[in-house]
Structure formats: C-alpha cells, structure tokens
Image 1: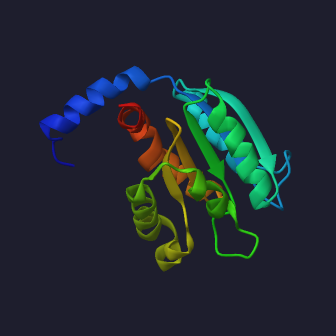
Image 2: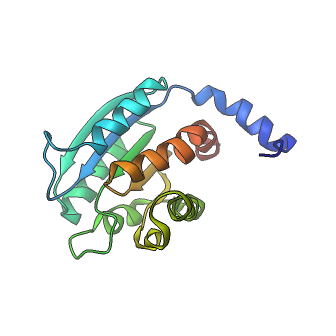
Image 3: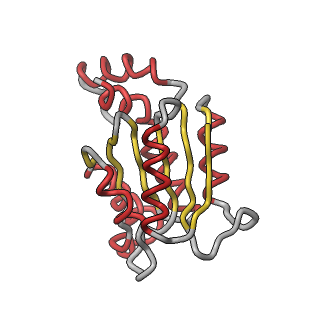
Length: 175
C-alpha cells in the first residue's frame, strides 16, 4: 500500500478521539437462536477486543417492522455511537433488513458496500458477491452498518473495512 496523503493522515490522527465507541449489535434471522447465533457474538467480541463497548445486543426474526422499530429505539439512545446489524441482507423473500435500515439513514455510504462486495469477490465467494446487499450509512449522528449473516462475511467486513475505519467514519459523521 502506498503512503497516505497528508489530509488522510490528519483525518486519521484526529479520528483517534473515537477509539472507544459505544456499540449495539443486532442479529436478524429466522433460523438462528441465541444459542446458535455465531455472527452476533463474533461482532461483539471483535469490538470489545479493540476497546469498544457493546452497550446492547439482540436477536430478531426477519420481520421488517420489528427490525425498524428496534433500530429506531437504538437511534434515539444517547449512549450509542455505532449500530451493527447482521443477517437478512440477501435476495430471499424473507431478507428484509436493508428495507428496514435504508429509510432510517440520513446518508448512505455506498463505498462500504462496494468495497465489501469487491473483497468478497476477490477473497471469498467470487461472483456470488453480487448477491450481497450489505450497506452502511449515518443516522442521527450514528454509524449504522448492515452485514450478511455468515461469520466469514462478518469477519471480512470487520477486519478489512470497519475496524480500521471506525474512528475515521465517526469523525466524519460527527463533524
């Protein structure tokens, strides 16, 4: 990788004030239970290991109104900076997470989904990466991210995109 431009370096240095973010994690699934969910706990552990705090977590079925209502409650909370949703992002008839999330966003971050699909194509699933509707954006001063439910996809998104950029994303959202 080449050296970062001066402006990007300054942004990253300023982003250090967002090293300890307050997060919430929601698993959306018709097939997972608290006992069988692996992606939600993986996200929580990954955030905690890097110094962030998981303030809340939950598991809901693929029911768009319930997911949206739950997210609205979290978006109203003063003690949250980041909301990560896992599951329900595919093309199946019950996959409605994106439809629940997108209307709540003030601004979408198209580059997140684009980069996630590119990395998925290159490193994991080849052309099947087009099936993902993963997205991210800002809402009420918070970062909202919607990821697929598979642990491999969650790990890719966290390790390669989100965790390295969380502080920078929050800096920009809160400017």
